[in-house]
Amino acid sequence: MLKNIEIPLEPAKVILLTGDENRGFELLGGIVAGLFPVDIADMVGHLELLVRDLGGELDIIEGHIPVSSVYLGPDPERHLLFSRVGEEIYAQTGMLRNQNTVLERFGLEASFVERRISTLSGGEKMRLALAIAFSKSAQCTLLHGVVPWLDAEGKKKLEEEIEETRQRKGCVLILEQEIEGLLSIADDILYFKGNTLIHGNREKLAQRRGAVNSLLGRITQTMKKNPNASELLRFDTIRFQYEKTLHDGFQLADVSFSLTSSSVYGLIGDNGAGKSTIAKIIMGLELPASGTVYFLGKDLQFVPRSELVRNVCYVGQFPEQQITLSTVDQYRKKANRAGNEISEALLRMYFDDKKRYPIALLSPLDMKILCISAFICEDTRLVILDEPTWGIDAEGESRLCEILLSIVLHISDISILIISHDRGFIHALNAKILRLDRGRIYIYNESE
Image (cartoon, rainbow, N blue to C red; front, side, top):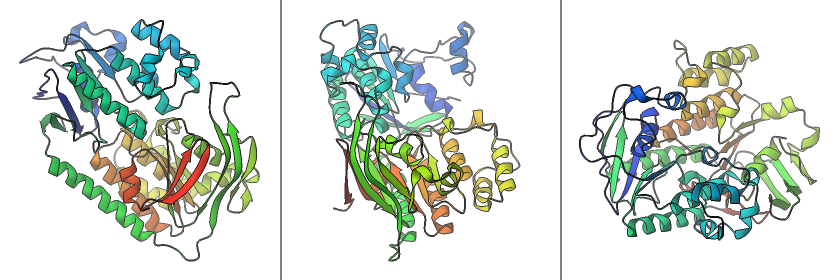
């Protein structure tokens, strides 16, 4: 899986590693961090599961694994084990007093010390995990897939912490696909090509991004403004709150907006603002405290679940949580029984019907494509994608764009709602922006 890997770890150096997002890519950070034993004979049970694809031995030709390192992966929940924030900080750093100094590293308020971790948004969990990681002042800090979780403030704080690490002669290795904001601070850029590393070329990386933007532009051109566009969805003074206590949760305060047919929208906002919650309200997974949601002119609470699922194709940030069958072939047979020709066509386009595809062996990109392909149908009027670019490389983004293009070519009056921190992706779609800020929605065009 890995061959001729050379990572130039040096004090005061920032290394950006991008490229093919596969099992080998996932293993690189953990190996450098010393999480995996070099001698596979010494493997213990729970680690053996993590590195089941890693065979043979690792030979360190030059240098050594960093003496002290911190590894932070793309799922912050795997790094947070306690019920409250204060307990987590104490367990990982030993700090019992002045824990707010840890939180300040990533702009979290002192009140977060008393928060239950279960009430934090995904972005807030990542900021907490990052704050703890950088508080440890390790010789080498390894970050894998953290950027998509961060809003503008979080990304700024990350750059500040990386620079502070550089100043104290620490080394930072960043494994990332969303690299635009990191190119200027990286000393070295490496590209993972299948199973080996090559030096990254900034121009070639820009070309890959250009190819993605070209596909996004074709989607926009295909969805030309329809003068007869009708109202698709409307939030009318929606109020919502997860928790009623002082420090837990957030609230949506009189949120009102509407989506029209044949349009592209981008929903943005700071971590914890409630972007994913709005998607869950649309899907009926959360119920507002007051106000009304209208879908195709009907009060959403009176729309049958089966009708809503036919009309809305929703793919969350973690699509594996939405997959209920065991193989792609089972989804193929389900589409065939339902007479869902567009689903059958997309599954055939992206999954060879002569091969078996157990769900357990699918990549994050494959799972996103499977969910889109399986959940779309002729009646679909709205596609909702929550952080669609998370965890996929430039080639994967191109494949994702191709499937969206296929859909808008087939269904003329469909609309797309993208929930993302990736402003470049949204900008290339020329989407109308819905910004969620302090419980309210503000609408403007990306070009403004």
